[in-house]
Length: 95
Ligand code: SF4
Image 1 (tube, protein in one colour):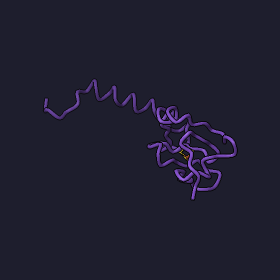
Image 2 (spheres, rainbow, N blue to C red; image 1 turned 180 degrees about the horizontal axis):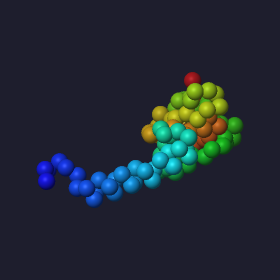
Image 3 (spheres, rainbow, N blue to C red; image 1 turned 90 degrees about the vertical axis):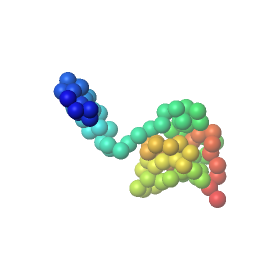
Image 4 (spheres, helix red, strand yellow; image 1 turned 60 degrees about the vertical axis):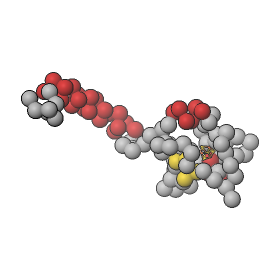
């Protein structure tokens, strides 16, 4: 066997994992959707405003396709599920 060949058993196992992921990706509706649970937890992110402050008013928020769509946050990497009505302890008023 050549050095860069994947053994048949391992190849079939990887194929099974890939097939098992299809319903998860389809159910989420967006193949690129992702959350960063550890950063959300560290910053105490919540899906609702606090004291009239929310992500849509924060300088770190990157809006989605529309005002109501989920967006992302400059300080929470690899998270595309930030609600414009969410909030976390790093909130900073947009200039
Ligand atoms: Fe929302 Fe916090 Fe990111 Fe500001 S820093 S956009 S409040 S998650």
